[in-house]
Length: 586
Image (cartoon, rainbow, N blue to C red; front, side, top):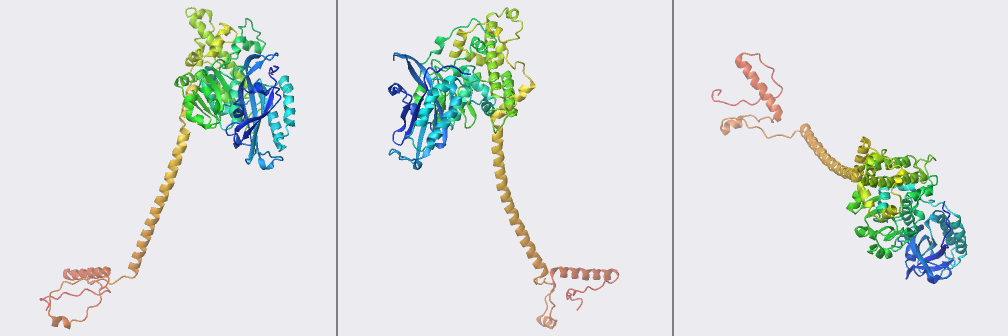
């Protein structure tokens, strides 16, 4: 539970979209001197995110640099403030009193709350959404009474205390990104340029807050995250000389938590408008975690990111080769994150993603957070042990008889080597004891050699990375289309062939049932006088070709039997062929 009293009284602002001037601040509520807020020229663009008009309601989260003032009015140190806005739109024709400057068919406005810590935003989001909906339901934007009462209640409600993790869904993060969740966690510790992209601003921002909440204690220590020039956090640290193991906060402090990834040269912008790109490109900005809803940044990902997380596609694209090598998960890493993914998947409830359907502890938000806390503590302990082993290489076995090998190897030496070059490691090393591994065992939670399960898991992961399923789907679709087209062509060909064969059979049947007269086959006869020919009777009509050959064969067979003394055969009914006249018979 967070019980810190705010140093900055929360204020409220109304931001509207003007048809000619674009987003602009319309009024402030709870501010005595509005001139002191002139340092936020980009606030309207942060409150009204790109693409907010495409949904009925959306939320934006952003950070602001603010210079505190002492009681006498003089400037104090700069700090980070946190803003949350609820954007809605209304059909302008339904307004009770329509201002003359409203020329478009819809009116778009955002109610903005600015506070000194994001730990209040879980409960604040629900209240802000209800107040904004009620204000829009009035259909009269000139009536700000409900907004004023809301601002007056903020100071009391935020100072009483709130669950700092309310509204953050680690279960959704793990369910959507699976093993990549650990990759993103380790990536944060390496402090690269991380760019998140998504079409829904609310989801975009909350995913980043959820990821940062996995680093123990970080959400309550973001005072330097709004600008790369801020570096106050390190100045107030001290090296603890004792620890109370029964006190979780004391234990985390002794172990160097939180690992401060935001400080000099770093920036956190849950929603970062295009107008802020010059800060990202500045030479003084070494690392950041930012989010954008504008797809133009996708075309320039190599310029503005070392790693791009696309929430619409649930993809992680690491553009830096050295970072890709450092983020390679070891066998122990994969075993560990797979156990968490399995616990979440087996208890997943589509109707209520925030809690397991078993209503138990395993797979819950607290379960996931404690697992990552244990991972972080064992990692820093193993690194300290690694340094100790290197320092006392000759006698390390005698000094640490219970430690087998180098425990840092299970976290990946490429990762450890790159982490040691970061600012958060420098601060960690500066304010922690060199032998804190005596307190937390220097061992990976899933330490152990390579097993067949690890090999199977790795092969499965590589197949996933190759996206063979998608390619096979595309291949199957292409083959199916080709088969359908081929089947159509083949069917048409068979239909044509069948039709031709049927026509041919029909023609032949007609010819056989109604035979046409054929030309008579000429007999081999010698030439005779015309007077002799005229005395012969007229020749009978010739039979069909089949009948002619049958009669001729019968006649030849009879002559043969007579010549050789055989039994005379029956005379066929068909007419015998005419005799050829020869001189010997004359």
